[in-house]
Image (cartoon, rainbow, N blue to C red):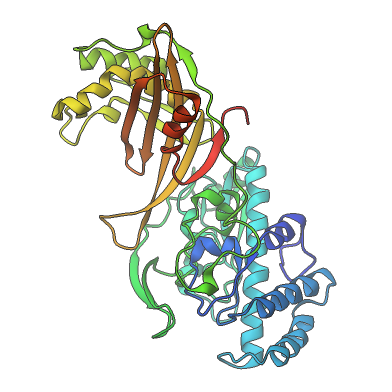
Length: 428
């Protein structure tokens, strides 16, 4: 594979580009960072036909090998056809549109390839390639070697700004060791500390916003385009009431699982703790189900592939006290703690919901909700267990117990707990 995105494309880059929803926008700030991995936009192109023409022109220029020069000619034709008014010169604007889309498609495709061979090439090296007018921060990162799993790549994976041509190379253990020895080191570098700064982007009347970005990264580029593409459900939801931001032709950001009818699991009544159970004993039993103890937690991977930390802290408040000691209502949860474990281990459904962060303005938090329905052996009892996980760990769980209702009423109980996007259902 060539190192230059100006050459012939590769399958992963093509798939990344083809999967994008075409969205009209009033301003480039209408969608932000990770959302660009799922949407093709041209700033100020507010009509479907105009956006569609630009999308096809870039794709055709790449496919037929004509590159930017082909797109440059098509750009003038499209502008004349739609009577589009834009900022800047034709040469500058067409170059920005073409280069940004081609480079980010290349970077997303390259990321997918590197992830696929991460077990063989577990280190990544930052490669600063600009010769003219280099960014000093980017130049300082040249040759930086970090583990492929280092979180630094979440915000510093190229493209890191307008016109940035930096790349990332994957290294085998042997290649990394050779590079370390050349620098007089015995292991990978330490990720540079991230210095955050606030910047306001977008002109007045065109969706301005104040954003936090790492120093050295242009606003709107502090994300990993390939990771956002591979993990679409981690991308913040598309927001905004303007018609130009409404979804086009397919769901945002990708198709997702459809819910079906719930099928309760019948369990023994012995799984429910008696009233007055000792909290420490109940927690110890719960943790043991996952292979954890009061003193030692474990990492648990759920049915959707997300990793959660299972420790006694799940059941403690900030002071270290058990949460349910605060009220009788919360204490009742202790009786159904084993049903909660079953809901987490083998859920009927998992739902993901983005919610606004009340503590940090402008931020979103992802909540994971695990649902499972039960019937109790020998009793006319129906239960729906909800175990909810937020950005700071377990945020709540509830078990609804009721006399065995009709199938329609049972489904109504269960359906009320469905909220957000369904990412897993039993039997998939």
